[in-house]
Image 1 (cartoon, rainbow, N blue to C red):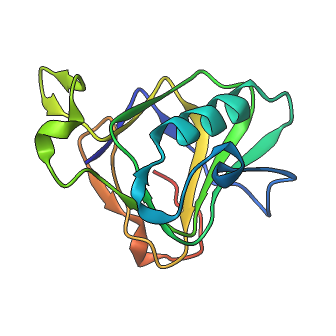
Image 2 (cartoon, rainbow, N blue to C red):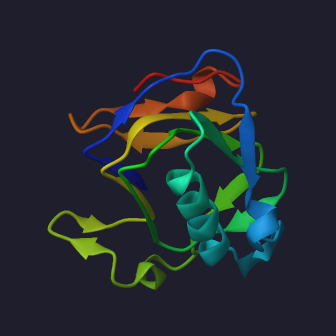
Length: 146
């Protein structure tokens, strides 16, 4: 389950001028290695950037990502370009200390504004602050306003 808390998502026109590849931070596309720390480092780098738009790029492959909280506010508009597959832990209890009053979460965007998520043949569900679920696989390769 991917949760967005206190977020405002925006689509962008065109492509971002600056890209941060999660593989450069140690993410492994093998479907076995935990890439959570690499995703956190890439997010942190993008969030601190002073460039107007930054893309966090996830290349093709299968990336194991345990529970992560991607915190804002960020200086830049962030585009998450997911060309690979993000894999949650197979055991729900491995989500560890990500509990809250509403349950355990996999990926949380907290205090993030000006963000879009793009995917290539991706299925990604985001919960908006209103509680509405959105499946962006309906519009592959396009940013989705949420």
